[in-house]
Image 1 (cartoon, helix red, strand yellow):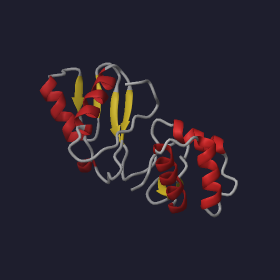
Image 2 (image 1 turned 90 degrees about the vertical axis):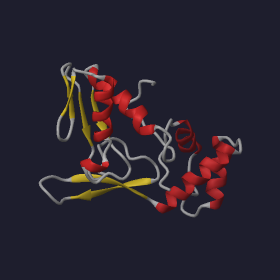
Image 3 (image 1 turned 120 degrees about the vertical axis):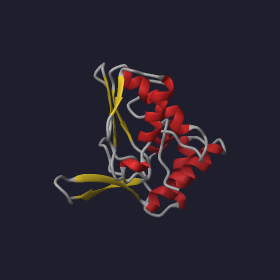
Length: 170
């Protein structure tokens, strides 16, 4: 895997994402890194990949990793934790989403919520790129086709195209 701050897997059921990412995260953790693992729909530890990671630790017989009730720790200082209830873990809000704040409980939490109009623009950018169009031409078409996006700059399209992963809420 390339060194990037975020790793995102997209694909259908049964594509091996859970096993692949479990193994990678366990390797990172065993190497002393701290990892936050999140799923699009994860409201509890039961919906996380925690049980899969515990099975992988047992299958690979890794004595330096220690599964606990809600996380995994390593003798080397690494730790795997799980983002709860679909809340954002911070960082820049990508185009197509907005922040929604939840003040329930003891602390304020942030959740990313899709913006329908921007999601339509993202779908258009993806389709136009698949047809071989460049950022300038895509930006011009967005400006002409989508009300409210008349000043949509080509450099924004370029950034979206160049992103390794750009979330589309489908």
